[in-house]
Image (tube, rainbow, N blue to C red; front, side, top):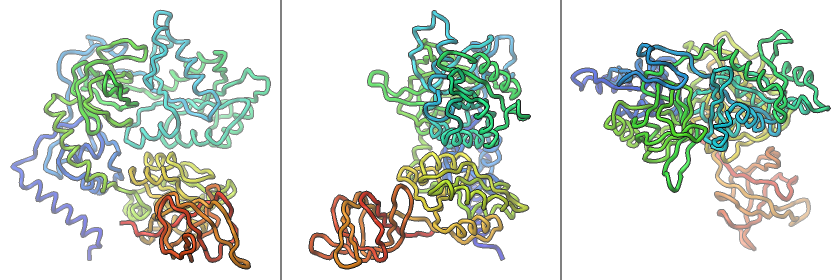
Amino acid sequence: MATKKEQELNRDSSAIKKSASRKTGPQELILPAALSVKQLGASMGVSPIEVIKHLMRNGVMAGINQGIDFDLAAVVVPAFGFKAKLVEAVGSQVESEGHGSKDEDKGEVIQRSPVVTILGHVDHGKTTLLDTIRSSRVTDAEIGGITQHIGAYQVEYKDQKITFLDTPGHAAFTAIRARGASVTDIAILVVAADDGVMPQTIEAINHAKAAALPIIVAINKTDKPESDPDKVKRQLTERGLIIEEFGGDVIAVPISAKNNLGIEDLLESVLIVAEISELTADPQKLAAGVVIEVKLDRHKGPVATILVKEGTLKIGDAMVAGTTWGKVKAMTNDLGLRVKLAGPAVPAEILGFSSLPQAGDLFFVAPDDKTARLYVENALKSKEEDLHLTRTITLEEVMSGIPAGEEKELNLIVKADTQGSVEAVRSSLTGMDTANARINILHSGNGGITEGDVLLASASKGIVLGFNVTPETSAERAAEQEGVEIRTYNIIYKLLEDVEAALKGLLEPAYKDIIQGSAIIRVVFGVRKQSRVAGVMVTSGRLTKGANVRLIREEQVLFEGSITGLRRFKDEVNEVNSGLECGVDIRGLEDFAEGDILETHRRERNR
């Protein structure tokens, strides 16, 4: 007898076939080289959830904002009565500065510039390194344009160009990946020789590894008397980055960003890694790439910084990004100079969008204005529906995929209240691999669950596990938008049981934690012998008598119980809303202090 899930899939398949059979034949669907699941659904006029289901049947787990290439899209669209056709370049041969010549055959791939992102701990010199590289690589004639900031720029070294993305942090770097845009080719990890590997260094390593990027280590501040590069190398080895002199394959370059020492060696290393990676692109295609930054200028209107991945962007092109479109009216490079073309791996600031796209949106050039408008119209029609249909990749789905051989790796982000707890959870998870799947801990650390943790999980199709910690409000919002499951525990063996059950395919349906209200303790006073009551201010939602409540101090959960009494002035009440003060009595809770957070919550089964 078919399972409930199989019956549901069969019904979906029948609906798809009926939809396709009403057509006289497969309709031609023009698609770019890359687009998101949402854009693919919109182009066909179907729910993105139907697209996700069909991708799952083909062994691909993807969220609504996940990017997919043309080949994968071509596998999906026939089930909906369409025949995919790749957007072809039109017009004459395109000569792009540094990216080809008129003698090249149309459609011929060429070597392109590498795209580099610089990551590392705060105050280790990331910004100084970027400024030094840029200022030392431009000519005197271009010096007036150095102050132009468009979020990405190019430098030239030994007649070869290198593109740098100036991302403000790891979260921004991962947010672009989470939206399906893997634009970076190489990560430079900056580590200060006088400070060593720090928490954000570890986070940067985990983010770069999750993106499967080659890493070059820039050991900065080596000219300082207290610097210890050997210590940095040993610490990196402990984190799985084995540098070349220790028998590994990671290049480590000693530099001083402040005094411009070792910068040429670093750029030389970038070119070596780029050559090994064999980076190519076709400049003759219609352009496709990613939106890096956006802003609304009071005089110019919507302004977007884009990075071209394939093809060549030209003035007058009709371009689509997310739920907006426009014609390229003007393009400016990182030196503030007007340009007419932007080829592969070239960043540019463009004018012409009808409204602001989102940073991280995939963009592509449509064959004409009519096609661009059609993409956007369909995307807008499905936008409201998408808000309610964000697909969450859960442990249950991972569990159901393992027996069928669809899942080979369970990606986890682990957060706990203390570093000792982190190590305990990590060591317990290590060695739980089965014949069908292995555990891959992308990132771990102590402290609350952050938005960056959620974005890393989204970009890597992972699950966030918390032990004795709760997610920040921004993390909960991001998890809902990105379709990421967050599971929190206060008993370690329950966490381990769930992971083991997922690997074995035995996991029970999950429940999510719904926050109903929170309050901050302003005063503590005793009302009778051996009893204390908290005077609180409700900061969000509401407190309800009988509700489950947890006490949080410095992002750690110290107590869980229920509210036994609420009092407003002299009156007993059943509920107190946001913005009001009240007294709270919680049975069994004695250890609380001013500044502690009370959070009421309920459990709801995932749908």
